Image (cartoon, rainbow, N blue to C red; front, side, top):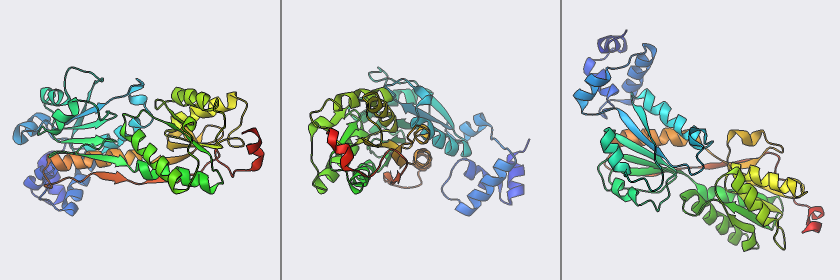
Length: 343
């Protein structure tokens, strides 16, 4: 098994330099860091965790919290990809993940759990902004990065997709297809993505001078069943929209099922657009047009900026807002008067 001296010899650097790369010190050039990291990977070198912890006063573990009210756990189609991105970066830098079991109303705070397990930092996903435990973490010295939640502090920042622009993109796309009556299935208001996607939707509806009908905006949870139930309600409206924007792909798949059960067709009678671009969206029939957020990149960015905070690379840490992208598939089509007769 390779030693730290072997890595230094092969990479042509000092043992001290290798140690600094392993421990994520900022005073190493990116070129040298990449060369040493490459040798570490090629030689499958793993530093002794106990010795490393004693010498650096770090545990080399990161606490990962995510709240999933649907109880899908690591099978969650969005969180799963984000977690994979987090894991990739942390593993390359010699960090492990402690996955914390956490539910709303848990009597232990995030900061208490981090301190009890001696983690070097925390990444949090899926928390509502109303969670009273968040303030304690924000005001602590624990390095923290939030995903899809705009919380900032001295040692905390966030990574988020541009949900407002993504929602505007969805409405604009439907408008360009000739739709003037557009509904929305939205997620729970307490979540940041639901809030921003509603803001973007309403801004674009107003900008384009489109009809606003409160019967066409239904709040539910971010699930297939939620989308199904919301669409069933919308289909009872006195007048029906010609297109529907769903704030998640799972919602859109559920809405598609409700539409078809009611005797309508997608996209002949209703154009349908989702958000996220989860894997199954390309395989449903018709395949789902959606707004893609780069979930893997979100995880990678969250991990990188957390390591920067831990390594004190900067004095301030700016939020990261990632762009979204329209993915055109089969669930939307040009609006025609033929579909208008039933409305």
